[in-house]
Amino acid sequence: MDELEREKQEVLRLRALLVKRDAELGAARGRLLELETRARYVLGAVRRLRELPAKLGGGLRRSRS
Image (tube, rainbow, N blue to C red):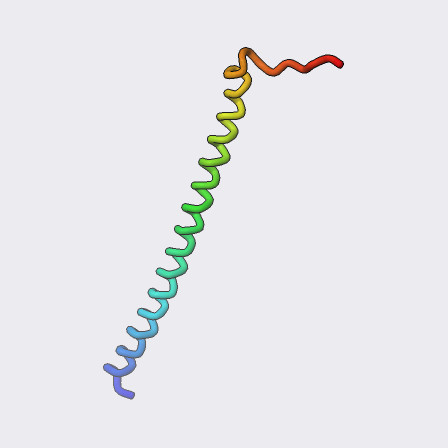
């Protein structure tokens, strides 16, 4: 195999690695977006639960039975 052919093979090998890494990065970014979305949802729910007592008129009162 001559030098030019070896270089072409190396370029193809490196390109394949780059494509694989790019796909892995895309998957990781997608997963991160999912986690960030879930975190925003949970934090919003926590905020709404914390505001609930004020909306119910000063807090929840336990009934004494």
